Image (cartoon, rainbow, N blue to C red; front, side, top):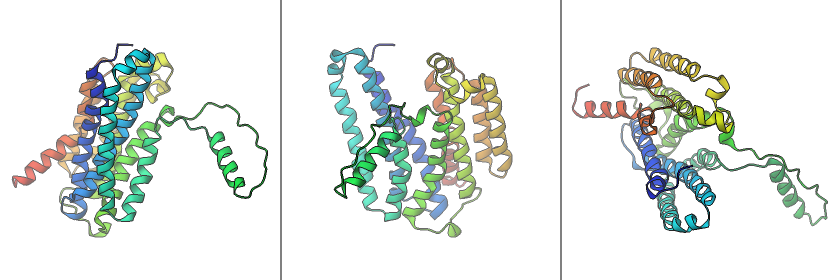
Length: 312
């Protein structure tokens, strides 16, 4: 394990969440425009700050584990950076709360529904202990002395360690959660959606869901050797070959491309994503995988520029 540095900490806790949030900024802007024909700051802010918090808190926990492994001296040296990270998260949380206060109650409920699983992503969940705690709480209201069997020590469930769950969660939250939150804030019916050509909101939902799922699986291809050594059962590890994963991702992206041939931006994005599937690998620098992360954003920005210049 390489010694922790200030740059790696800042990159993990601040830079990477911001990079991920840029993709949410671009996609939520497109969806807001598709649904209502305008850019509303509230749903965009909710999506961006939620992304920063979900990724940032997860990375902050990871950094804490790393620092603890190096001992109290290193932990003390990085204490100011941890304070910086917590302040950064707190400011985003404050901005999220302020935005939610300006939004309808339905938007608050939907945001919580999609955000809670993301925040529990790396949290060990011991359902036996949770059940025992709930039972103890319920019976305590009746002032009865009840004997409880001490919960057996089973291995807690960690969502992100379940094969495929990262991709499914991320794809569902991004592809389905984002438009639901945006629609709830804007309070526009789906039937009256703006849907500027060549876009439709349903196509964007499908495209976004598939794109993010494929990206998450690609990051597992990147970590293939490490996951084998540590025994993490990712999809590439279970399939036993990154080549099989590449073939599957190519077929999936090609299917999306064929389904939406009328939209040149989705077609171009799918072609770009397919190219990255075969270009990027376990030996590629991690920073290059950000192109895969932004395989949507790039072409949405191109659409926005062309639209602004009346080139469409």
